Structures are given as structure tokens and as C-alpha cells.
Length: 341
Image (tube, rainbow, N blue to C red; front, side):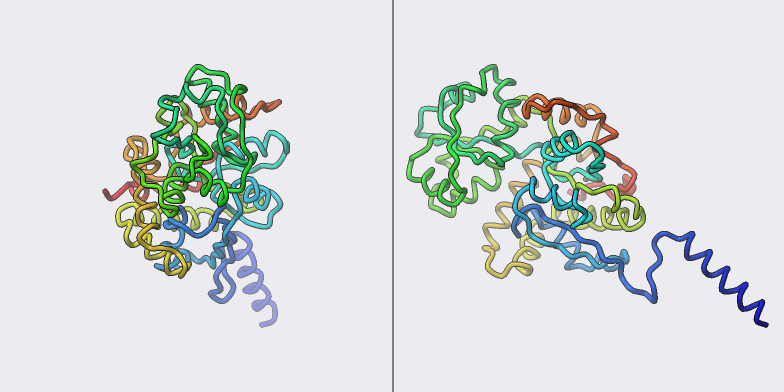
């Protein structure tokens, strides 16, 4: 009897060891995710997945925390404080080049078209991107649009070194831009447009130079994970699948996405976030590539372009192979990634 009990126990232990995603007594596996920014429309798909129980159904207890920009989010993922974050891929590439062995990689693409942009006043002196040469642009050193600006400038045939940058905090900078103190500002287009609208500047008063419309091929944000969290393959696969489902539903129904933002952040303006989400969806997510390959997918050519443009724009001393910054092994099936609308 004693020997048979030991054999049964040993067999059960072997089964557990061979199964990487077993939860003790039905407990959910904890997973920490950083939004990379505050709670707004850019978080809608993740919040909708959480609100509708998709993470829980997948066996995960996902903590979704706010962030303070891509650089900070990537450092937190790199340190192991978070399993994954929404972050700018160019910033992740810079981190990997400067930290050999970091093993950070994107496991899904969030913004198929790069949202970095320069916003200018329609009543100002700038009519084309080339008119930015020699001008002063509002943008902080950590600003992703500022950092990738050299790729945009070179694609438009002017020297980015001729531009002067004004380092003013975003809230003060927005107010001064509306007052007319600056003719140009660097933003994610959907952040800038709505920030300025909240300060009384109508969209009809602004011209947008989106980098993706002017020769820049880089992807925008992706879901960035560290090596340790990617070793938990079933948990990462479950997180990406649930997040994909949340985003596909937010793309199909921006009203539901905005409501999920409001439910998480009661002080959010739901109408503004609905408008922002529509800008995000139409400008960066509902694209020919996303329609063809599904949400979250990437192509080798554009991944290589993302690396090449980042290395050149940031002046990096080294480079990466595509396999050093991207993996598709956690993506759900093509049918599960397909857009509904």
C-alpha cells in the first residue's frame, strides 16, 4: 500500500513538472502589465479584455498599471518588475543595443502604422515638412517623436540637425502651443490632437505630419516582454491571445472601448476617449497590413525597416537582427487575429 501510494504521488509530480501552466487549486497565474502611459484610449483593448474577463478565462490574474512613457516602461520590463508593457519599438531596440543580453522582444504589434507626428499651426509659417528646417519644435528629449524625427527629416530631404528643440513639460507646452508660442510640436498624433482640443484648439486649426505618411516605415508600439516572462510560454500565449481579443473588439466597437477606459478611470472624459480611440483605430490599427495579416502580426521587411530607421535616427553604435527584437510564437491563430470590421 505504501509503495503504491508513493508511485501514484511520483506520477502526479511528474505530470505537474511536465505541464508549464498548471495553477494550484484553480488559482490564477499573476501577470504584471504596464500600459506605458496613463489610462486613456490607447489602453482600451487591454481594459476591455480585463473588464470582460478574458484574462481570467485564460487563467491569468493580470495587473494593469499606468506608466510614464516607453523608456520607463521598457526599463521596468528589463528589470523584471513587469512581465510585459506597451512600448515604442524604437525605444526597445535602443535598449537592446545598449544592453547586450537584455533579451527584450516584441510579442505582438499594437500600432501597425507609426503614430509619431509633428503638429503645426495652420496659420503659421510651416506648410510642408521641409519648412521645419531651421525652426524650433516643442518636444522633450525622451519624446519618441523627437527621437525618431531624424528618420522623418531625412525621408523628406532636409538635415534634422538644423532643427532646434524646446524642452517644455507636456502640459505647459500644450498651453503655450495653443497661445501661439510655438509653430510645431512633436506628438503621437492622437495624443496631441486631443490634448490641444481640450485646451480650446480645434482640429481644423492644426496640420498633421504623420511620419508614416512621409516615408517612415517603422512600426509604432508593440507588446514588449522580457526573457523570463517569455519562458512562461503558456502564460504569455494566454496574455497575448486575450489582449488580441480585447483589441479586436475595441476596434469593432470604440464605444465599448471608451466605456472600459471610463470604468477604470472615472475622471476620464468618455467622449474625448471615444474620439481618441477612433483616431487610434483609423490611423494606426485598421490598416491594409492588419486587414491582411490580423492584429498583432508583423512582416520581416517592416521589422527590418524599424531596426534600420531606429539605428540611423538614434545614432546607435550597433544593430540587431530581426530575431533579436521580435517573435511571433505567442500570437494566436490567423482566424483569432482577424479584424471584425
